[in-house]
Structure formats: C-alpha cells, structure tokens
Image (cartoon, one colour):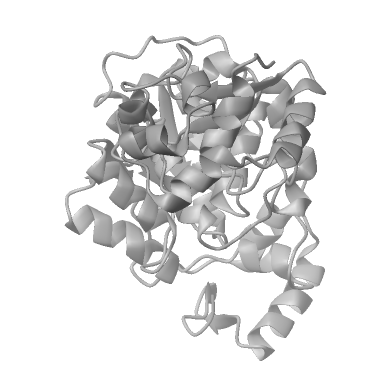
Length: 368
C-alpha cells in the first residue's frame, strides 16, 4: 500500500548520509514536497552538501517506480517511513533508526512486544533443541519472536514459532524481493503468511556482507531483549548483543558445554553481565509487563522441513554433542537405525569431525 508521498520517501532514501535521525531533523525545517521542488540555493540553506543536493535535484525515478510497482503488486506489502504512526516506537528511539521499513505480512506485529532470538549458523543438537523449546514457550507468553532468517538458530526459532501457531518477524539483510539465503524461500513465504518480513533495503537489493550488521541493529531495536542461544566468540550474534546493550535492551544467554566453541560467545556475554537463562521464566521475569497468553499449540521438537546439509553425515553430526553422546541416543535423535549411525560415526571419526570416547562420542574440538 502506497500514497502520493512514498515516491519522495524513496527518493530521500537514495540521498547520501540521510538516515532516519537526520531525516527527522531535516523535516522539521521543510516538507518532502518542498524539499524535492526546491532550488539549489534552498537545499544549501537546509545544510545539504553538494552530493546531497544533486541527489535531491536528480532522483532516479525509474528505480523508484520499480520499487513502487513492487509495493503495489500485493496487498500485504507496506512502506513505513519513520514519521508514520505505525513505525515501531522501540525502533524509532535507537541511535540510528532506519529511514524506511519495507514490510510484507502483518504490519501490526511490529508494535507488539517482541523478543529477539539469535545464534550460530551451525548449531549443535543442544542448541537446536533449546532454540525450539524457548521459542515455542515464549510465544505462549504473548511474545513475538524476531530473528534474522539466517541458517541455524534463526531458522530453528522461526520454524518453532510457526509450528506453535505463534507470531514471528524475520528481518532481512537484503531486499524483500531477494530473500537470502535462497534455501529459506519457503520459510520466508510461511512467515509472510503468518507473521511479517521486514527490511530497510529496497526490494531488489542483493546480499552484501555489510548489510547484515545493519540488519542486526533492527532485530535488537524492535525487541525488548535479545536471547543468544549458541554463539562463537566471533559470531555475528555478538554484534546483535552489542547493539542490544547500546540500545538499552536486555541480553540473555544460554550456557553450554565449556568444550563447545559455539558456546564460547554465550559464556563471554554472561561474564560481561548478560543474564544466564535455563528456562523461559528467566526471560519473562525481566519483562513483567507483557500480556500473558496461553492459546498457542505446542510444537514438535523438530520441523520435518529440513535444511540442505553440507555433509553426507550432517544429520548424525548435528546430534553429537560436546558432552559424551551414546550411539543409541544419536540413533534416537536422528531417527536412523543404529547400524547406519555407527557407519556414519566411523566416517565422521575418520574425517576428524567426532572422537570415540568411553561411553560414546563427542564432537572434535578441531572442527566446527
């Protein structure tokens, strides 16, 4: 849904060094219509430099029309400028709020109480299990689960919420017409139908490394707090946690095995003052003002819609922990015959992904 001023908002988005905060100050001096019909002298009087003046005087109307056509192609597509009444107040108050938000799906979710859940792209069985259980239980408490649609913990949380008939928001580091990663196209469609997809980038924007930290500030900015499920010390999830702290949000971290590199980031956050969590009440006790609801269905532990795996034995590897795990337990978790599991474990051991130890198997510390 668009209006006559949206073309000017899209044009303002293309003006260099004009983000949400600068735009609010600029629009205290002028209007969008006057801005884009003003002279060079007038633009100079507003404090715009030469590059900004040229961008205002010569918008790329062809690109803008393409984006407007995308917005009007479906009824559930929305453009929310920072001055709009449905722009979420939590996000508006961060240090660098987005000028615009593109939204597909239920736009009302953006103003509901949200908790962000983030973590590693290569979770262990432990990480997946707790991502699922925490997400499913938190939606039962009336929270919207917000994450980044990434491989790993993000997608596990989104899927758990959908299975529980809850509400979830996915914030993308690309335009909404270019869902990334591509393997999550189906998941994105499900979120679009039962939640919301959000991006500050123009619809056809491709994935670029620098976009994902920018996405992370929106994930935390929309939320009351950030739950880090599993994260290495160099994980992007720690960027989300840092943004959360800068934005005055709560940071929660799930502890893991001390031998698990994917838990090192969580342990670091706990050492720095993040709240250690072992159950959902550790989170909701900090958020006592949320509305409690219990009308959601329980979710199965794992979705049947599995992601593409990177190893022939990835399913087996995912079910080996950094604590001793028996072959029988691995077979139960993976729902594969013990004989097949033992063959896969032998192959993983030869390739140094797991180690055989008394009582079972553990993940190798030299990988992952």
